[in-house]
Amino acid sequence: MVSGVRCQVSGEETTGPKGEGWQEEIARFKGGSGHDLVGILTLPTPSAPSPEPGTRNQEPGTRGPAVVVLHGWGTCRSGPHRMLVELCRELARAGLAALRFDLAGRGDSGGDFWSVGLDDMIADARAAGDFLAKATGAGTFAVAGLCSGANVALGVACGDARFTAVAALSALPFQKQRGAEQAAARTGATARELGAKAFSLDTWRRFFRGEVAVGRILKRLFGGEGGKSAKAKAAPALGTGTGSPARSAGSGDCPQTRNLKDSSRDIQAELAGYKGRLLFIHGAADAEGLSGWTEVFEPFLMASKADYRHEAIPGADHDYHDYAAKRQAIEAVVAFLVEDKPPES
Image 1 (tube, rainbow, N blue to C red):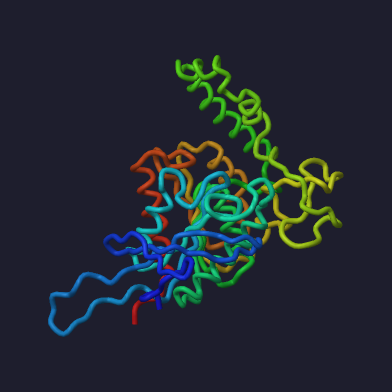
Image 2: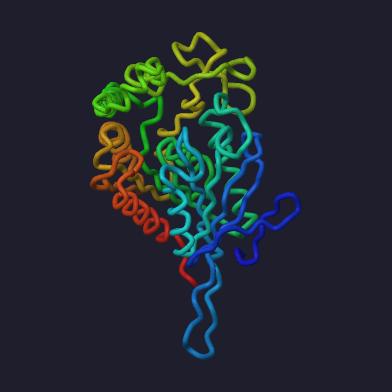
C-alpha cells in the first residue's frame, strides 16, 4: 500500500512538501543503466473526512497503475516550467502514485550526459517501474514522457508487459523513421525562433560581447537531431555488450561513435504488437511534432490497428509554454491514465 511509505536517505526519513491530495518524498534507486538515480515520489493522500457518521476516510490509491514520468533530453525531473511537477501532483489527486526522476547524466542523478543513450534511459525507466512496485505495491504501470521522454516511454512500454498505458507528449519520430519532412519542419521552426531573437537589442549586445555561440546556432539550423554522438565506452563488436551499443553517428563504418538518440531496437515496429493504450499529444503550434505525427506515427498506427488516440492542444508549442495549453495537456494525460485505474472495490 502507498500509505506509510517513506524513502530513506542516509538512514533518515525524507518527507517532502504536501498539498491537497498529494505528498512528496525523495526517491533513490539504482537505474538499469547502472547509475544511482534521484527522483521525487508523489503519493495520493487520504480524502477529507466524510460528514456522514460511521464512514471512514478513503485510503490513498494503492493499486495503480502507478505512473513513471519522464523528462526530455536536455532537462530534468521538473520538466519545462515545472510541467512534470504539476502533472505528478494532479495524478496523485486523482489517486495515482507518480515517480518523476532525473535520467542518468541529468539533474541529481549519476552518469555522464554525453555518454547516456536512449537505450540507457529505457533501462532506467524500467528500473523506475521496479522501484514503484516495491514502494506502492502496484502490479501495473503507466508511463508519461515529454519530447525525448516520450520516445523513452514508448521504448519501455513495448519491452515490458507491466506498462499498460503510455501518454506521449510532443513525441518525435525515432531516428530510423525520421525523414526530410521532419528535418524541414525542425529547420523552419528553428529559423523562426532565431529570426525573432535577431530583432532583440539584447541579442546584439550579447553578440558583440562574444556571448552568442554562433557555431551552436548553425548546428541547430543545419545539424538537426542526428548531430549528437559520443565515443563509445568500449568498442566491442557492434551491438554487443551492456547498455547502449556502440553505433556510428554516420554511415555505420565507425564503431567508436554512436548516435545517443538512436536505439539498438526498432521501437516503432514494436509498437505494432503493443497491447496497451496509447495517447499522443502535440501542440497545435509545434510544426515539427505535428509533422512527425501526420507523416510517421499516425499512418503506422492506423495500419497496425493499435489502441491509440491523438490530441492537438490549441496554442501549445513543443514545450507547452502557454499556461492554459500546459494545463489542458496535463488534464488530458490525467483523464487518460485514470481510465486505466481499476475501480475501487
